[in-house]
Amino acid sequence: MLPVLLRNGRRAVSVIGGVRTGRGTDTVALAGVQPRRSIIDQSYSVHFMDFMGTSIPSSMKKLVVTKLSHNFREAVSVQNAAVPTPGDKELLVRNRFVGVNASDINYSAGRYDPSRKPPFDAGFEGIGEVVGLGLSASSRFTIGDTVAYFCNGAFAEYTVVPAKESVPVPAVKPEFLTLLVSGATAYIALKRLGDLAKGETVLVTAAAGGTGQFAVQFAKQAGCHVIGTCSSDEKAGFLKSLHCDRAINYTTEDLAKTLRKEYPDGIDVVYESVGGSVLEVAVNNLANKGRLIVIGFISGYQTQVGIPHFKGATLPVKLLQRSASMRGFFLPHFMSDYREALGNMMQMFVKGRLVCEVDCGDLAEGGRFVGLESVFRAVDYMYAGKNLGKVVVEVAPPSVATETLPQCEILYRRDLSQACRAAAFTSRHRKSKTHRSTSTRSHSGGSQNSSLHSKCELL
Ligand code: X1H
Image 1: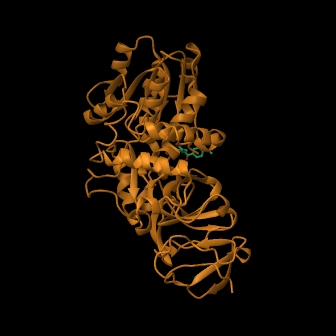
Image 2: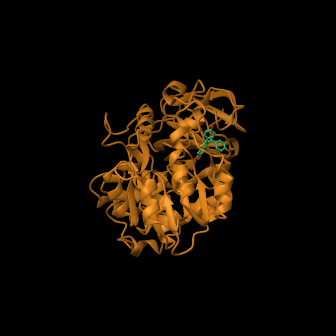
Image 3: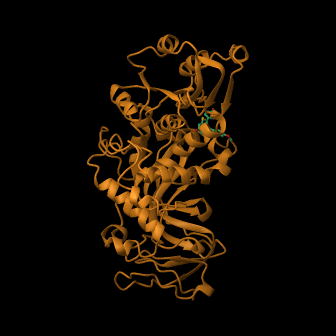
């Protein structure tokens, strides 16, 4: 008998070398909450599954792309599936929050890999608790660790994630989730392609969105003059709170006219994710030696071709006339920059120098995005341009194990630096009252975390 799999209320299934053997054991019930897991016999095991007194169910819900379509609701369906078993170098993560990206639609439309046929799992990023892991993965992680990850199949109650693609986080807070794709995109794109110099003018489109909010802050930190476009006065107010120098609400101001009038010398760097007519205006207002970074073109994703109309024939002339350049940025091509980016952003966040605005739909029709099914509403909400900050869905309530135990119990297995990060984080967030007020609030630089952050070595 393979002795190690402890799953309350279900027959344990074991895996050797990542392949299901079909050999099971009878359930070994945990007697009450155990403060530490006991590894019964490492030599026979390749992974460990338990969860400090809470149970891992036998089945779960996940979102599966069953038909390729740019209409997310048509493409994706909720399915019941067995909770997957992690292989040797993998973690089983109980997702608490998952991030919604504009490109979830590109993925469900089959644009990422046209050779890939459905069904396949949806969702790019999540944050949660490790509830199972393989033997090799146990050299760096253990049950109860809190991790964030950027990997396919996040729209599920549980996701198997390669350990090397998991990032330890001090607490399961959605703010950390904003950094994985949206924050990293802004950080790496501006660093590698922006070539920002102090005093330059930077235009960020969709600036109050998931990634735009970070581009605004990083460009300000580089000493640039930052212009941000948005669709409401509330968002313009948010941008002002990020020290954006000029927020342009394009529903009440003409973007082209405003740029021509207020920035006659042109824009040095554009961080562009809308496409179509917004991209045209940006190209037409580039300065000499201007750099336009194509992050995406959301205005076209919900169409059959996925690409918004763009008058491209004159583009080479316009670039030539100004010695300007236009470059695309796709995050997976820049993974060598990822670790440094994430480490620096986490440091900034802990020190109170980075706002990570999260929108869980508290103000959305139908209320907060809770439960996997609300991913559909969350995608609609984003495409209606209603979000302020990163759209995040709360997949599951906090686990009993991590939320009700005293802080010292929760932290017992973490090293000192991790513990101090968690304490710093908690103290900052207890002070915030509402969802919307959590960021516009404390980005003045420095923070109550300062006495702790010096002891904290992130990543
Ligand atoms: C291998 O390189 C890629 C790059 C982009 C593969 C797929 C895509 C893709 O589907 C994307 C994409 C991915 C990330 C992102 O932040 C923005 C975009 S836009 C986009 C796309 C949209 C419509 C198409 O017809 C083709 C690609």
